[in-house]
Amino acid sequence: MRVDHVAIAVNNVDQAIKNYQKVLNSDRIEVEIVESEKVKVAMINLQDTRIELMEPTEPSSTISKYLEKHGEGIHHIAITADNIEQDLSRASASGIKLLGDLREGSYGRKIIFLHPKSLNGVLLELCEAPPDRDSLSNN
Image: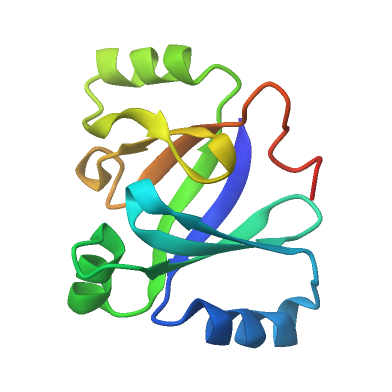
């Protein structure tokens, strides 16, 4: 397992991209609307990980609610799973509370979130790239 990305909730993805480019000097950026999550995401690809900027596309989005309560900032840390079903089973059997079901996230990855109350206040996402796309190799 390794860190796949750090996700940051933002009010405006386009402005946030400009801010992060000033510091990160990366032009390897992918933008996608994830209808199921009601967000616009921008993945800033770094050498061995990524920064994900997330802007809500609807007021009912979880990210919209997060921004209202907390403002902009780190939302979650995502970990790449080699076998997400196995990792999920192990976490669940160990008493880790899951948020929702295994589902498709950005770029066709399988994702699930683990409750921050189970992990010392940190929202953790497990994600697994489809077999035809490693999470960093095609960036």
